[in-house]
Image 1 (tube, rainbow, N blue to C red):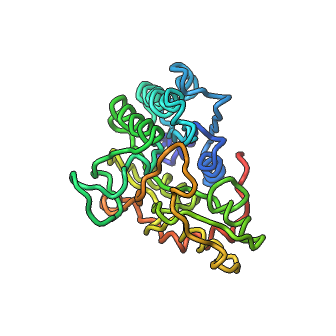
Image 2 (cartoon, one colour):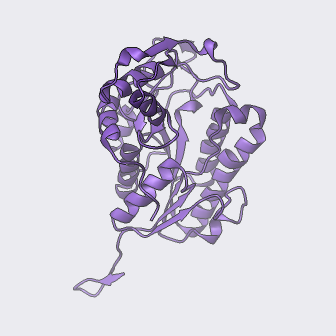
Length: 306
């Protein structure tokens, strides 16, 4: 804290507390927070097990901005162990919200496009269009149900929290995400089959993190916001774009339907996120997904946590 000329105290940037800091969003967020001059408390699950009701309270202080990135993200695994998914994604998220409410901290809670069911609005099917925050949720798998339960629990425990839904987050570098996996195959000119019946909004992690800082800094108070790169693409289209951006032949990518490679958890056929409501609330729209992908593929690997 520093003193102004008038003798009143002025605070520097708020401390950023990150739960789930070992994941791709948490790591990028921690590095960017440090670059912007914030104090950073980056908590992995070994540091703060959010399923323990008392754990978050040991770290959260008044004036903090807490970003809950902690999540059970094994979509297929959740089908056979839904209780484990709920423990982290619902009960754990609620524990973080209670800790923030008691301490007087701000909370941004990261959620997912998988709370939606795939192109159904107002009780009936219509041509797909990006989902907005007020559209009916209808998750088709256990992971989505657990994340929706977490949204509701967070807002019940702390009504001024902000739930930030995002979609198909990737680094495009040396990670395990879809774009990074396609990058490795493109660099080897490897023929690749990719599903063409799942459509979402591919989102570059750096753009999501920039949106999180804007939401925190601008005090945008909508309870639910969407932060995803603009537009929609199938996994097949995303894969072809990765190949093309890297100078590989996109014809090496072949479309298949999901039935060719069944998985334990169904995926929504359409889960693209729209940004109109979020823009009206003050969030700068994220750039088109293809522009973001081009930058991501030129970038360095994920930064290390400070």
